[in-house]
Length: 252
Image (tube, rainbow, N blue to C red; front, side):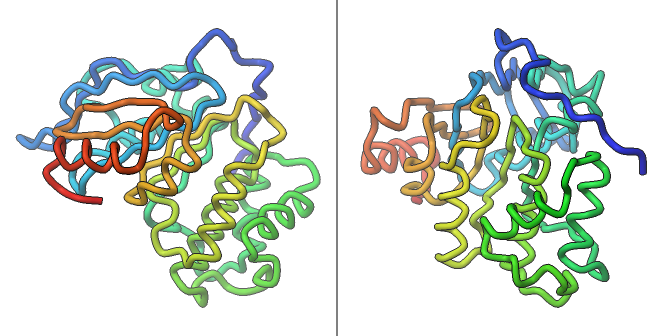
């Protein structure tokens, strides 16, 4: 596979929002998953998205990650229209999905080396070692991916998403399947400044406390729309929990 040329932040128009969605809708047959998403995420912000199962969180992230197409609406990621230029978006984002999606017969190191070649990374072994160490996986370098537990595979998938130091990180419930130690490592990694101070993170989660702890903004997705959006610093866990229950009819 041909190497990918990375776009660095200085090549982006910093006046653009990192993520923009305007009246984004997505239907699966007669079922409407997204009913008009309006969202703006400035550069350098960490957005935590909460929502009940089936609220459209995964669908929204898949659209932002170019893994699905909206039925209608406008999307911009770093000012780029992913419907017109998906490869350019993929060069600058890191994505963590529910499934690790690793090559089972390759070792952890071989999995990451494959992606390092795709992005034509300089000093790939150094970058691989750094990402694995951040997630406590450095001793698993020579272990075949299929022999790892789901939680360990998830750690590798997070390392893979961080490998090319993306300026936008999209994560769908990244803590799912992780033990408490790994969740703390993930939180520390997300809080640590990257080489690019403009990195933007959009994360879905069911963990309200951690979502508020790491986020700058918190949103609640309900009935296929962003029904609530506030600064994390200005709200309490109890307030968001109460609002979540009122909007979704479920608890966190």
